[in-house]
Length: 165
Image (cartoon, rainbow, N blue to C red):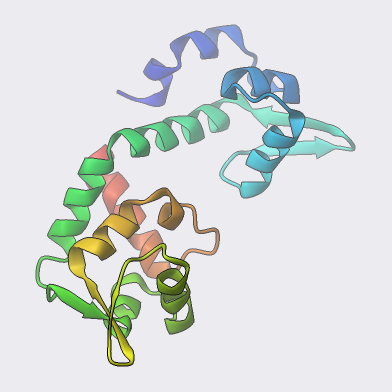
């Protein structure tokens, strides 16, 4: 199923370019602020003319479809990462996680210290079971990272190409 089939009613009801209120209706937002925040995050084509925004209906619907499909396919994403990391050891050091995810050591340590990525501390080093890393990579927290590493972007592209299509 593609986004045009999934959002058939919205495509027939709404014009090609939406205003902020129409976007709020489609996304079930209660405030303009939520709509503006969604636009600022990127991934949705829009044009600003002063305080007026013209939002591409198709771009918005594609974005919503991808987001919804990713949420529904958490198990597919988990299986994708499990197959991808099949040859990795069962326990990973911080430096291994940096290599696997493409993020710097400070980011990985921040994930661990904030509790987003579960780890065990052995003497002065953190060790992360591979299953914990995969669970974190499937989480909304990891997927919502704004400045994604090149490797993270590549994983997303491969997942969309192989699993979603």
